[in-house]
Length: 260
Ligand SMILES: O=C(CO)COP(=O)(O)O
View 1 (spheres, rainbow, N blue to C red):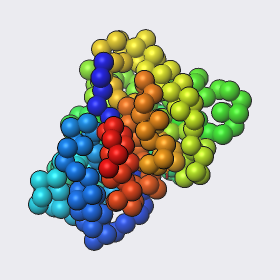
View 2 (view 1 turned 60 degrees about the vertical axis):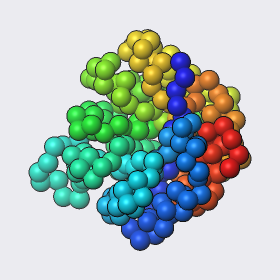
View 3 (view 1 turned 30 degrees about the horizontal axis):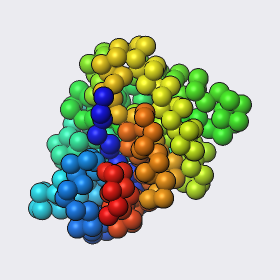
View 4 (view 1 turned 120 degrees about the vertical axis):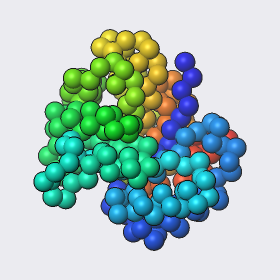
C-alpha cells in the first residue's frame, strides 16, 4: 500500500515568532508547489510561534501544515504552563509531536503519560506524531527492537484500532538525535518494519498498512532519499536541518522523489 511520505520539521526550542514567519515564507518560496503532490510538509514550531505561523500560512494559502511539540493529557483547568490539545486545534494545528525523547528524558514522561496525551490529541482531531526510540546502551546490547515495540505498545495502550490508525509513529533512536550519527538505512528499516509488524499483530492489517512510520535523527538532504526509499520508512521527523528553510525545502523535494 502506497503511503504518502511526511516530512515534519521539529524546530524544538528555536526561532521566535518573527523568525518563524521568515522561515515559513522562505520554505514556501523555495519548494515548488508540484512537490506537495508527492510529500506532505509540516513544521512544528514552539507554542509561541503558532499564531504567527498560522497567519503566514493562511495569508498565502500555503500547502504547509503545522503542529505543536507537546500537549497536556488534561482537557483544561489548573495546569500552569501547559497547553491543551483543544487550544492547538483551535490554532489550526494538524499535528502534535508527543513522547519526544527530550520530553521523556528532561520531563520524565513515561509511556502511560504519553498514551494519555495521544488519546487527548485524537479526541480533539489532532494527528499525534508519537516518538519512540532506544538509547545507545540498548542499541549496543542488541535490545532495540524489543525496546521500541514495548514503547509502541505502552504509548498506544487503551486505544482502539480506529484511533491507532490516525497516529503517525516516529522512530528516533536517541543516539542519532542531534549527534550527526544517522542510523543506517538498514537500521531504520529494521525497526520501522518491526513496529509495523507489531501494529499488524495488535491492531490488524488495515491499521499496519495505513499508519505512517517516520525516521528521525540527523536527517539531512544527503540521507533523506535513501531513508524514505526503505519499504517501511514513510518520511522523516527533522530537527536541526528544518531550521534552515532552503535546505529543508531541498530535503522535502528529495523525499518527494526529485531534486529541487
Ligand atoms: O529529534 C529530532 C526530531 O524530532 C531529530 O533531531 P536532529 O534532526 O537535529 O537530529
